[in-house]
Image 1: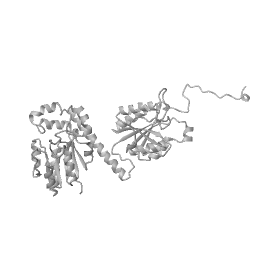
Image 2 (image 1 turned 90 degrees about the horizontal axis):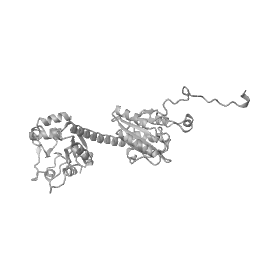
Image 3 (image 1 turned 45 degrees about the horizontal axis):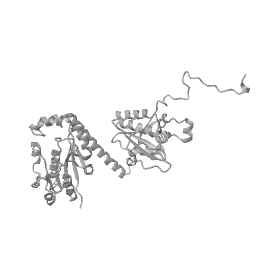
Image 4 (image 1 turned 90 degrees about the vertical axis):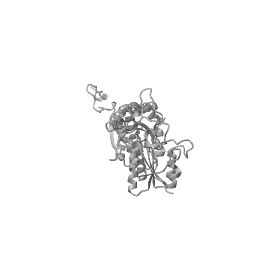
Length: 407
């Protein structure tokens, strides 16, 4: 039997219009001759929501006022509308949670359109509690929602939602003042809205990554700016991190730092799943990357990288480590796996002779990146202005003449 499709209307808070949007979809599908029923609706006595039911068929609830899963299965429509996915069923119900009822309907080949607030996502309950001061009992595992075939964000600005509340379109008049003074403060609503936007963006980004993998697409798509900064273990990379952070902030991009640990075997897989987040690697050669430099006195590469990881996280970025036999190849592979649009490197402090003998990491990165990733080379305070021409005021040491040239 073909499994039904799941569509979720996700909102930042009660009252943004999720149930109304779900009913609207029901009417559109019915107009296209789809067999649609309402399995469960929580209208909260809102006049506009009740009016939107219209001529949609409603499956009667059980005596406990929960959704009658058996009745829906017996009716077996093409699509069923089920409000409030996170609801906890009463004791003695078929399942403890409504999302489990929905799973049974999907398994029976019935497609489900449902609603959910971001506060009920399991991974965000602690964040929401810190924002609102309210602990959520009704939750849904993130994996259930991420597995949905479609997720649509029902968005509304905090100010518009407050006006809707003040006009009595969400709660009855006796509850409005308390709600506006607590949960429905503009600051709370703005934070919840940002949580919803970020969660949906992350889920969309995950879908794009899977699509690119399935179709063998390794060229970055500029769907969301990412700035990757390469850390080589040198002690002067703080300047490089700050420059990359400013670039990310100007572009409203994600900041991602990567340190490549050199290996002697074939390069490892450089996708996000191959990165290590636990901390700097035990082996971090000082010359392992473009930004490499000698550690500060008393600080080994491990301590230096640990400090750089903390700095990256202070800027809201993430730190990763990958292993690779060839530094440039590993950096570009990581940047592509992250779908990065920009790669930031520190200027090399090797001598020209060393670069001629060993090759330039920066040049190899430029060749490997091609035209799909913008590569930025940033001078550090130790290298800025460095030149083979002596600084004004410096004294040249003259070579000693041989005895036969003296006199």
